Length: 113
Picture 1 (tube, rainbow, N blue to C red):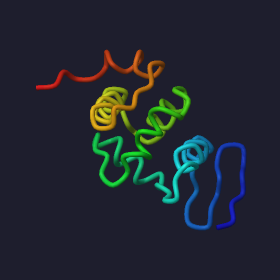
Picture 2 (cartoon, helix red, strand yellow):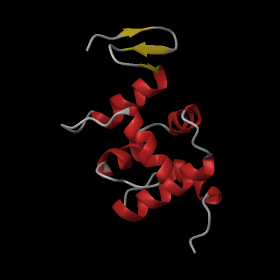
Picture 3 (tube, helix red, strand yellow):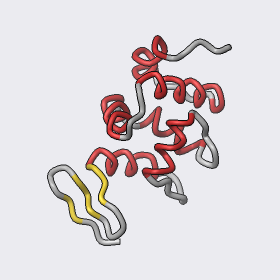
Picture 4 (spheres, one colour):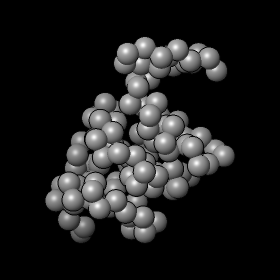
């Protein structure tokens, strides 16, 4: 796929996505053979389910800079409380955590019932 980078978007043959999306995907997909898409990552986070992407979602929460995590979520209509719920679900399922991100998110997560 040929990509062109503008000030705010990376335009690919099939879709345009933001520079934040590009940075997030570059970080999340770098260590793995299989690439998650923006849509799949967004869905996993919005639903707080890892589906077939546990390592990618864990990498999103642990290796992506917290300000990019928040920018990605905001750009894709994911509230901070949903982001917190997804983080806690990912932490519980994988044992991976990010103290910097966690300090901002834990107070936002709904109590488990």
